[in-house]
Length: 415
Image (cartoon, rainbow, N blue to C red; front, side, top):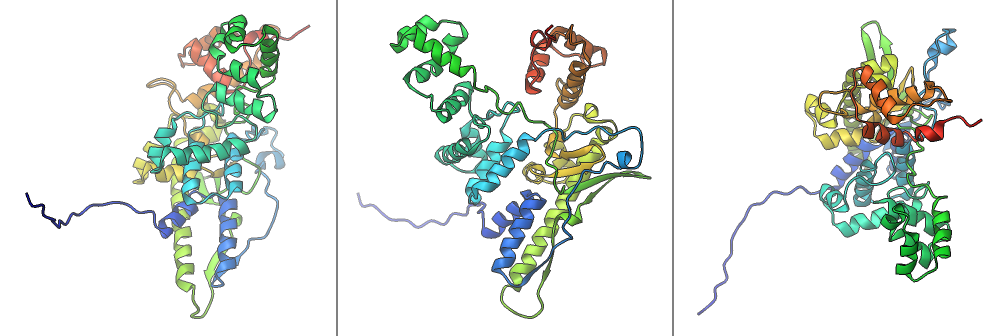
């Protein structure tokens, strides 16, 4: 039988991440500080890009009521650093390329309030269009750079292992204990020692070291607070309601130099990308804060359930576009500087209030409780139910842990 070579023509579609598209994505997800640095880099390379920097001044959150003599001082939400701000600053410092940066942002979006990853590496690889080895490589860099150590761990064992490695305590006995955390939870120290071929005293010594580690390194961060810096958006209440505007003082103005020198087309393209970024940022910010107007009025306890898919559908955008825009965006409000991303919160149960609002109410209940008779998780659940938010005790325990609040017996005042 004689074989024949055949020529066939097939038409396929695929999306290529061109240089222009990669630049557009980078500009879209950059906050004011990051975009300013990028523009300075571009202006240094292309003399046709002219930057007019705004007057430099230290930004302070707008305490208008306090400065104006109003006796009712607004609640300050930015009392502690945010996990989002910590992670975004770390990613920025790593100077990753476009693909690595896309993976890093996906990993950051997958972080749970505990500081652990909430999605598998396979899912992140599929989301970013890369392979699992590439995701693992970026994850390793993030884990090694993370502060506090243990962020980006995939489970408890890895979280503790990273801290043991940093402390120089990851010896043979510690590895054996970390590999048998299920036995440790049952108190079977003798079995761990027997299986590992070490003494019980050695196992107990390693367990003592473990107790000094932080099993949830992300829990110590404030969920809503943003850094005290120039915010990207400003929310103010006017005669017709809440108005959201771009903070023009946070970014330099970009123009094209006069003449016909090389680089003018690139400069015009950059300006067009920035204008698109600003328009998208403003529309997303307006849509988000319109949904969360009650939170602007009374605080985060009034948050309503809201997802990125809902905002994307409202604006006719892709959900990934909304995710990129809100990733590092801060909005200045009379109640402090908030992360826009933190205002997205799902309902604790179908048809119920937002989980973020319940966590706010839970924190207030604990803050107002009698220190001599702290409320149990059952009592906290009952108190939340009285406010029209039926919630299970285990959910209260979960939210309490996310807020870094100890159980009732540890909150009791010691005499």
